[in-house]
Length: 476
Image (cartoon, rainbow, N blue to C red; front, top):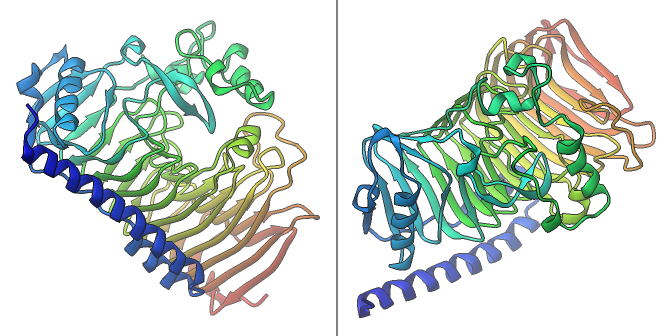
């Protein structure tokens, strides 16, 4: 029944959302004119609107959910979310207990909230993930739905101190990567078969419309865990996430995203912790990443598909996070064809013999794109395996990656960085002769131990200011 109270709440929600959008646009005008990067960061943060929800609660148990870890609760989640959004929004509550489900699709003004001892167990049966418009490794397609998915939504959240368990392991999703390390055996299908990932990339290069890039059953391209696609005003807060099939947090073409206090432990293939892609105004803070791939990887599309979309990722802020295992702490690339700029990283701790680099930029001449204005300060690094800063234009993990799109990398600043063991190199950087990596500054950086100070190829204008490596002040 529609009541005056419901109409009033919906009107307030609509005008509040409108006000947040106008406020954000006005704030961005200020950001553009601010020249000091760290003041610019502060303005960006102030301009990110906060999610706001009604205090109404919709417990999934009231819609038929059973907390036995065996009963499939997909329909209970759907019904609770539908009721919540149709009545002006609020909190969809997951009470303490274990709930098995297929994909969960969020709607406007819905906060999916897990109680402290609640655990959502996601089915490992691909049939429980309907085909949707999504993305795989920087290329759009029609594929299995992400485990939690929202498309074209505003004011949405996943919160609470419960656990999201993808249940991925070597017996299901991970083996699809085609690696013996993750359970794949010769003769078993995987994403590496020619009709799978290779065909998708070829379709994008040939500009086949996304709606005709239909994969899913028989193609072995794993789904993302949580994807907000073309969303605005998003919050992911406090949850613990484990055992992901693929990329874990994936804001895609989204604006005004806050990731706060999330703990991620997942060591599967391509288990990146957080991958903002084609996204702007993203704040990642107070999180812990312990991953099988990059802890945070900022992306903007792969090759032709990235150039087709053409939306750079920018205004990405990382604060007060801890990076444990991973290929890199904060990374840009390799799916980076539309460019990345205005990245700020501060007050983080990175430490593990299984963490390969602290800061990494990876691209190549098939990707192209411009990566610029990367600011890092107040970082404590215990141990990294390879180097403190790695910037390359020759990233080559899937065979030949040579093309006609020479990338640009410029304006990288590291300030007040303390490193105990930097691995093989302080800085490892290689650019093209016709497109050197430009403007790297290390200020107040101390690397107590590293095999070599640097390895540089086609790098222009590198500055060491009050920087000590292996006990020696570096002059360059």
